[in-house]
Length: 321
Image: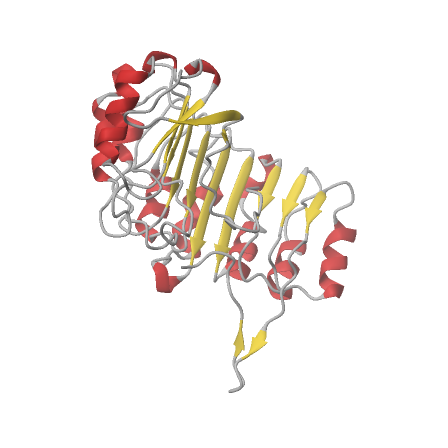
């Protein structure tokens, strides 16, 4: 679970820690010694006030740091990231992959809402990163606008996460079509249709079958307008039997979805069930907890549906725009 921050919300800039390492910003013309790169995650961006191009920051990384020793990179905001896509920085990384033989963790788009709202971030095809870094173990991407992925086989990837206010269905289908034999952790923030989140339960079917994900231990299908439908599908999904943790959080989960979940296959083998940001009644929340003794169940952020005055009930996901 990504912790909630009262200032940045769920949209951390990862300017303090990432992948268990302290973060060090690398900038052009900076003074001072660079810490041992093997012990830090390096972060590059165009500067808080977009003071220099992202390509210039990447050039500083190549010249100031022993790139062969870098284990983790955080890509922050690039110039006009709400208007220009990540294609340039993705290309720079892929073209220089041989210079980063130790890279294991990569986050593209660690941009907080004071720089660009999550659904304003212009992404691109991130497949070249998986193709160029066959040794990468962790890939995280924030922003769904313009995001693309082609089905690939990747032998080393252990964690894949997409954070966005709307994940395109074609990306969801591509994830399901990828062969990821080492993948242990998968998080998909599905989001709202208004922001491009048009995936259906049918699009999730290959992921829920789990045939291409033999090592999966954590599955997050989160932040969805159709969280009840997803819960119903998860209730009979083959992949669930091998999971240690399951996240159906951040979305519009109601008693109907929780009822379907409880009525499906046993979940008592889970170590953790994350349902935070939900619309369950007190009675249903109590039922979920009682039905899963020994399971750590997160039922925080209990929300209440709102009446719009015209008889329509309004619910909302945690992360949209």
